[in-house]
Amino acid sequence: MTIHGIGVDLLHVPRMAALVRRRGANKIVSRILSPPERSAFSRLSDEQAATRFLGVRWAVKEAAYKALYPLRPTWKELTYASFDPDTGSKPTLAFHPSSSTVPGQRPKLHVSVSHDGEYILAHVIAEHSDVV
Image (cartoon, rainbow, N blue to C red; front, side, top):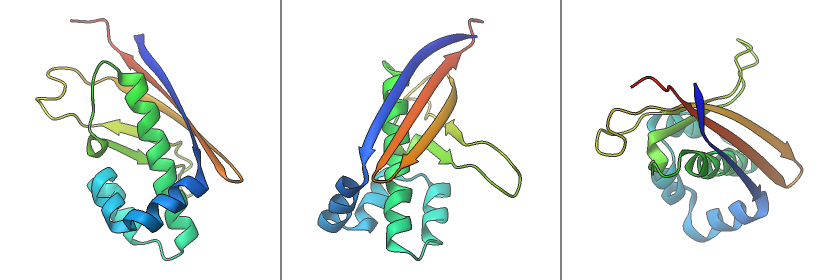
């Protein structure tokens, strides 16, 4: 396996909160979340948790976009799942490209997210097989 790319993104959570106030959560949800993410988002009842949820996905997908360049995934082709304390599974980022986006390629993605106060930091490493 070789590294295809590395991406990083830093998000100031108040910026996401301002975007949600301006555009509305539903518009952002329909633009950036994949179906499994939309399902998880619909179960959130707290506004602060919902803003952080959107902020994490925004930062992760921005970092993934940088790691995958020159591939150009859409927001909805990427699905982030956070750490699951019940199973102990680490965070994952799945890339489900349409055939027109990435014919015959599906890089494996590794993701790490950190939260600190008003900031979210996301790192993504994309790797691909050298086998043709």
